[in-house]
Image (tube, rainbow, N blue to C red; front, side):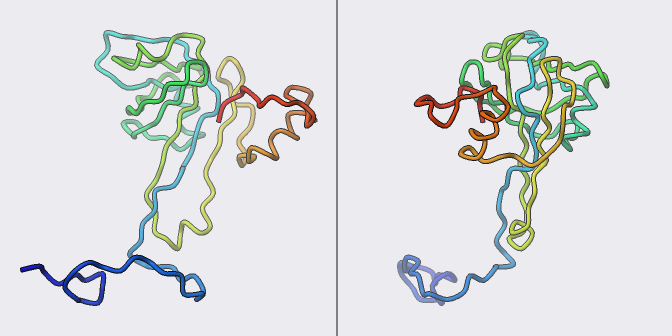
Length: 179
């Protein structure tokens, strides 16, 4: 016997697909969303240690600025090679600029590679509506340049052109500068 489904009013059988009703959007207190929490944007890998058990060692100053805790799950998106992986963060010496990718991940990330280290958080639906992530921008030595909101792609092209560091609006090519 098929059990009653709580998602379709207790009726037995398949539940109906969602249909738009034209009603105002309502937040649901039981819905949780996984949102982008923070990132260290385009930092430079300083070391890669294949013989370590795993993880990524990150300068404590960068971890604090990006609100990353030791042992927190992080994503590493390699801008240089196009690889992506998940691991956990370990705290490195404050002010050292260290970004050391450890273990098997060292096959995918090499010293000098540009990477983005990102975290995510599970939040309630109501909190998600006003969510603001933390974005830490660094220089080539992994020193903090600024912390600000992220500029969406189309607007970013105008910012790069104004700075004289990216394609102009008349350029047919997209920027190779990462996420």
